[in-house]
Amino acid sequence: MKIDITELMNHRTYRTEFDYRFDLDKTDVKCVGIPEDIHICENGIHVKGNVVDNLGIMTFSADVCAEYETVCARCLDELHRCVNFSFERTVVPGSGHGKAGEKSHINDDGEWDGITDDLLFANDSRIIPDADIVEELSLRLPMFALCSDDCPGLCPKCGKSLKDGPCGCETEDYINPQLAILRKLLENE
Ligand SMILES: [Zn+2]
Ligand SMILES: [Zn+2]
Image (cartoon, rainbow, N blue to C red; front, side):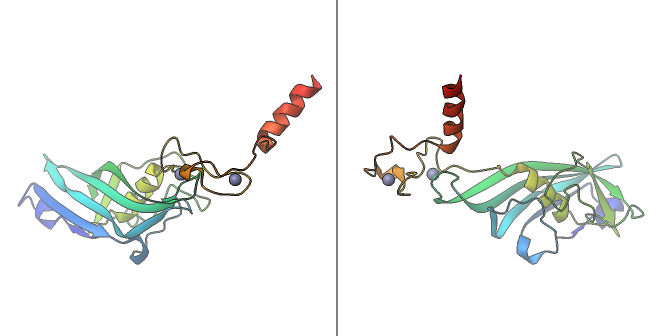
């Protein structure tokens, strides 16, 4: 989305509002930081807010709500979730700092370099915030999701979801591979 701030820059107004949704698949925004098992829903990113000129300092503020689909890390049930966050940046008019949104602080391996720009550049009186919003979104998404905190997961033997009750398998001899290592260590003592 291009947000036109010509009126703001010409001091004909001090506030410009916006309210739009965008579809990650239909933008050319690189989404390297989004985990592979998270799918952002079609048209699922809702951005609502304003750009305010306060004595020459322009601030872009938005409430972002992103809908996504993922699976429970324990039982693999499909989940439909939302993440909400507020996004605020100082707007710097004029180019000369490169194209807005071109540079990302998330590398191709999805690692964040620890720097959050708090600036948004306006080129030709237009702000294009979507790449920065997606970058922030990728930092706000959970590492994994659970359908509920006490999800019992799947039976390690038959793979049945234990949410529907016990599956009847004898799981006493089953030892989680990580615990097996621990037990071995204890036995050797
Ligand atoms: Zn679950
Ligand atoms: Zn079972």
